[in-house]
Image (spheres, one colour):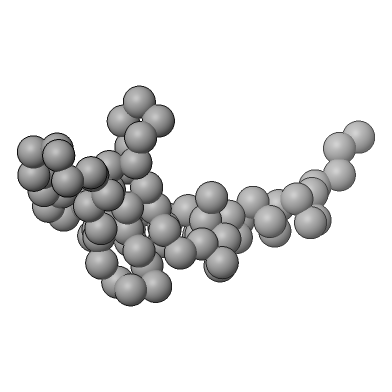
Length: 73
């Protein structure tokens, strides 16, 4: 999702959250348990910000299209 109320973007594996972008804090957060070997996610936050922007732009286009759809005969 990419609504104005979204505050996170998640990266997971097998249904488990590994990392998430916290847009309200402006940072990426590693969500792995302490027993897991340390992992880093370089540049994931920047990619998440870019994806969020693209999603919101596409959402605006879709909302306009569905509010005033072209008439078909």
